[in-house]
Structures are given as C-alpha cells and as structure tokens.
Amino acid sequence: MNPEVAAKFATYPEDVRNTLLAIRTLIFNIASEHELGRVEESLKWGEPSYAVKGGSPVRINWQAKAPDQLGVYFNCSTSLVATFREVYGDELQFAGNRELTLSRAEPLPLKLLQHCLEVALRYHNLKNLPLLGM
Image 1: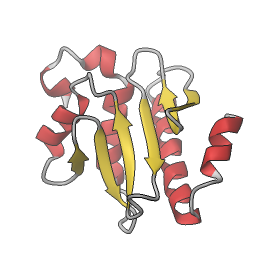
Image 2: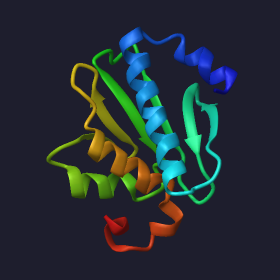
Image 3: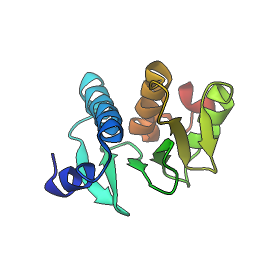
C-alpha cells in the first residue's frame, strides 16, 4: 500500500477503515479480473484514489462531518454518476454528480458497488455506449 494512503487509512475509525479497505480490495480484484493493468494508488484531495489506464479515477473517503456515511467519488465530468443513478437509483444513494453515498451502518451492496467500480475502471472503453453498457 502507498505509505501516504496507509497513513490516511490509519486515521479512520476501525469499522470505517475495514469497510474502505474492503472497497479497496474490490478495486484491485476488478482490475486483476478484467486485466486492466496496474492500479495507481495515491492521495487526491486528501482521499485515497485509485486509477487504471483507460479508466476514470475512483476516490473513497469518510469524513467526521458526515459520520454515518462513506463516499465513493467519481470524476464529475463523466457520465458515471448520472448513469449509475439511472440504473440503480432505487437501490443506491447519490449526492450531486460525483458521489455514491454508502451507509456506515449497512453492509456494502457488494454486487452493485462492484458493478459501478468496474464501469468506472473501464470507463474510456464504455463511455460511448448507451448507459455505459450497463
């Protein structure tokens, strides 16, 4: 793990850290399974960020000012969140045009989250497809 990212994870409460690490693992597993290449892990705007060549970056974070939720952030200049809202609007929560909001108290919606992460990591190959191929 990138040392700066590891230091950031160490600042989170234990349950949050475990959930965000599970999301991190999903990202690395998706990249491996779909042969998307090396995952670049860094801090962007103080948040753990993950990117692969040909994909759109994904950031994850928890903030004390919104203690009951976790955020998965996507590039706001893409159609990712608008598409996710169209497809999963009854099952997932979104904020604005960049955030998938997850409840800290609820189990991760693994199947839906995995699908959203996969689409983001493959974005440049999917961006011209209706509903990003979803």
